[in-house]
Image 1 (cartoon, rainbow, N blue to C red):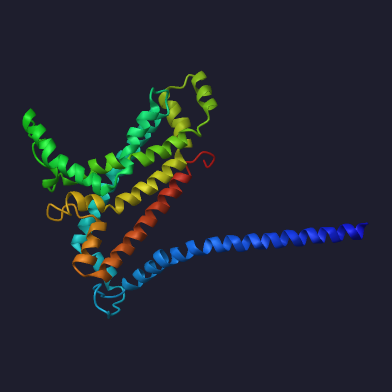
Image 2 (cartoon, rainbow, N blue to C red):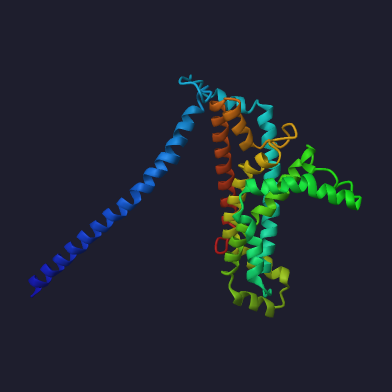
Length: 308
């Protein structure tokens, strides 16, 4: 009997191993198309771009010359690039702070006992379905015609001028448009995080006499750290790579006052035929985003619940 049982176990093991290998083959076959697309449309172009960053290729000629690290050294001597870097960082800091605060406030509001929450959620999420080019064109028209007419009618001089036409205020017009458009996704992420906050902790804190502010900073916010982490990575990346709004609203002007890094890379590579130099700039930005994201994630992970 023991011999028969051992043979049956061997047969069962063989069948399970055969089924397991067949499943593995199926998994691999389903993975191959996505892997080929990833290699063809992301990994290979990224590798070639890294290669071009060491050349003087203009993007058109069939031949080019390797110049080593000259493009990377030239980046730090380029006042135009440094100006765009300052503009991009200023824009990113303001946008990240505003979007995070507004998104968190809306998430708290829309998860409370508010009447017609579903309607308000739909209204606040609506901007996310529109492209940044569309948003930019809409706000461009608002700043150009609508607000100046309102300002003239009310006698408010500050509103009677197009803020996009002034190099000192153009950045704030871009910020207003992007904040209006970009609050929706962080808001949804925060709302998902608020659903995971244990209600019994809030109830216990209420019994102990904790105020709403104390409950928020001591209970709610620590549970939202993972969502805050995700939002900050997305918002910082979006801020440092801003391009669409600038194309639609200012085209880098007035002058070069609103040239972001992404827009400058586009100009250098496709309009000024400095493809190798533009590629070096893009790799620098890629490394910068990666470094900032790594530091931010490490710092916030230490403040997460259970990590302190």
